[in-house]
Length: 413
Image (cartoon, rainbow, N blue to C red; front, side, top):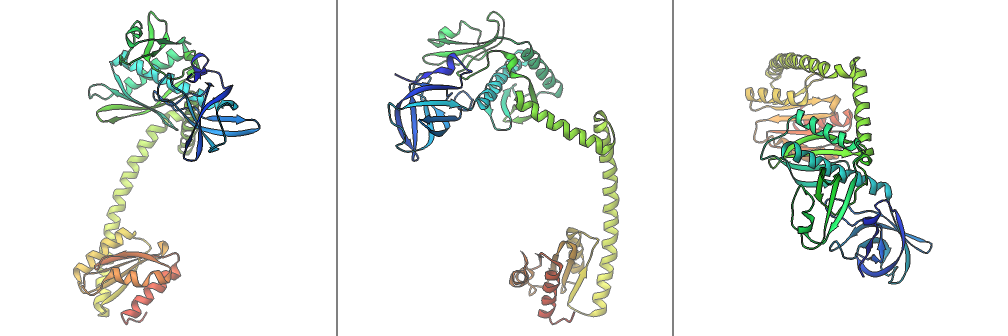
């Protein structure tokens, strides 16, 4: 006799006393089938239940439940070492009910969201996944993407149906043809028994779909449905959402973030968008002015470097800046060695403990200089013959590295 699935008659049952009927071994642990089970096996887009199995005073975890068909045994993967259980053992199965109810809320929410998409836009659900942090569905609208106003309409419509406290009925039919007695939204033929979930009245349901999952008895138990975002995926609308307490916690967290942003701007939550636009415009102007000033500084610094190199007659020059970024210094360096190809230019940014070497001389081998000298002084980096970068944990290490380079080049500091 195959496992009696208690959750089909009572989706709120959280435990049962039962008897082990068969045991297999998987990866060194007992895989257990029982006469009865409250565990829902993974299927229909809904994750399996998790929980425990107790044998006498010993308690073991169940991390996954599975089956081969809707009428086969339910197998419970335990963390019990192989050989712990045997057929005939009297055990107690218990699910993590909070986890089960959360998935029940999410699964029914997915039904109602998909049904709303079908009713309002003739959208077809082509994919459904329950994740840890959110649920996704892929809605096919023939290549069209939903607008924000349409998403708002869908979200409002679904929640009004949730709050209407509609009945949720699960019926089993012997054949797929028999199930067509109900106005199922998505007609997918199956061999053998078919389970149909109806939300609302049979004569005029809010939604009706074939599904073998576990759902609450009333729509109000979903609590609420919140759509987080919608993005394109293979020409379809991938909608990210969640339900119940999980959605509430996410909304509460987002509201707290909005409240903190409003406080930072010294404005109301409603005024945050306009304040952010104004700040973005101001920042764009600041970036433009900063870019112009940076170009001005680089031009002046270039002339100073060229002047100092010309006066010293040295083939190695050490340059330091606390103003220019490393990237700006790199650009400045290329401008300088374009003018003096034979120069080895050592550019330092002490506050970032970084050094950039630039040279167009073939024998300079900047990358090799870094590779052979930086590690022994606590640094790291690398590069090409014409330019390289070395990074250190302290300014002392940086200065020691540049001192060694000058010694190698027979230049006094």
